[in-house]
Length: 225
Image (cartoon, rainbow, N blue to C red; front, side, top):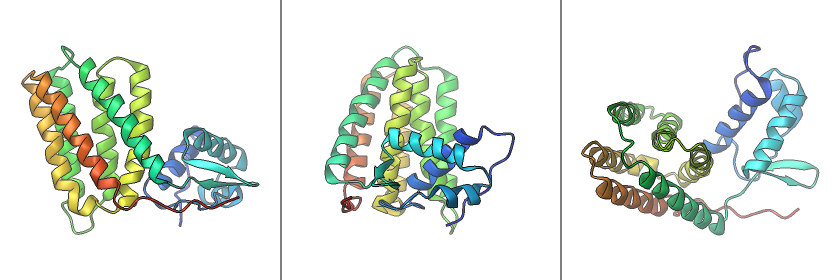
């Protein structure tokens, strides 16, 4: 695969982290692929030091792991998928609870913009699934941001990164994106009406559907050291 060189003005270790993270989430790097510092350094046109820093962050996030003397993309086991689903449900339902009395027209506008972008990303023959999950990430983290709880936002960002990786590996987006987008719309409609109980239930239903989608074909055999 080939990664785009980074701009010199950007914080190199942070941007390297983002680029490699996105490549893992989008399945450009498959489970158990070795992340080679020298190769990544050449592709991104930066030194190995920020690459090394980025790789250590990925290990801390659970997207990569140390295997012998190498760093590899973490596999996804059935237990991982179950844990991701459980944590995401707990976090995002708490988000819905904390949103009560904090919903504004600006929030509704941002959420609908994200839904529109999701629809547009898959309307052409060359469907952009990476953009679709990016917009999915924006949708859910926007909800968390509106709670004004930075710790809840951080948890939402982290768990959505892992969840979106599950979705990409499941190869179910082509058949589920319309339903998922509609589920987002139901959540927003309820929030706009200040019907927080219905919004909570809509989020619960959405998360259950996500679990059903990405549990299908995301497991990968874990290699031994």
